[in-house]
Image (cartoon, rainbow over all chains, first blue to last red; front, side, top):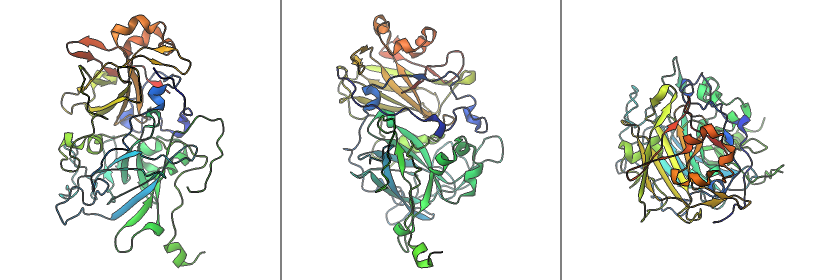
Length: 243
Length: 200
């Protein structure tokens, strides 16, 4: 039996969405009513499944072509999404597995439960994955997803978004989130986003247009950095160099 | 204002806010399978296989299966669950991870694994064997963490410092039921039988 030797700072729930947020109707019957039971961390939390060794396919990170017939590509605005995965102390998280999924350019998912009017794109599957390098950098190519309506009791539309699932170095760092696009007017009126009461935390989910990394005549670049829980410390002096 | 040439070539500033705080969760949504288990919903040809475990187990003698219920005892059929536990010796360096969605028709999740060993707290206190379970889905805004414990270890629960933090009348929600071939474990997101969820 091993003993734990590293711990993470407690989750800051003030920058997280509320579990019970009736404007997002699905939370009504799916939020816990009891308080979470606080536990000291053990190796169960401070170690995690690691996938840095995984041999990913050559086009796993390229949603434009990874489901397309040879020589073809997905329909939509061609984009490249890149950023860093850091922990709360500013340290890069290498070998993090990032899984992404999204609707197509018309706002339709390739899922049997999605029956939206927009057509499927025969050359777009809608999922991809990549690993961060030693500096925490990741990159994938895709098309900009469309906004779409969803059943929430009213005239509800999701802002264009890409789902992210991230494995850091510990199970306590496991993260499930969504990336949004700078300038989208739906951001301010989306119940799922607005279930986060903290404006700064909402802004942190919005990818920024990155002209320096856009590829002329090819791809528009967006930058989206992700922050995972960091080591336990009473105060961090965040080092902004390299961010 | 800066010249147009400069603005047209400008690198993006980070979206991260200072001081750095964990990125906010957002729901996995009802189509989580596309990203995490695409082959299971017919999105074939991108990955050869779905990522359902961190390594193939030569010794996986027990099945753990069950359902997830939302309020009003409705079965949830769009959940994704991940399971993380120590190996038989209590070692997390050889930790075992599984992923299972709840079946879109039946609502049943299922994994085949081995019994984890006892582990220790940082202070060296013994912890009864358990499996961490992480649940995400439509309507779950922040991933939920619970644990599966096993009835054959009940005799050491009284010595377990983590079990001591759970009120006695709710401990049974963390206990799997022995069945042929393994264990049954249901999760209740709310209601009278609400499962204990943890903040670590």
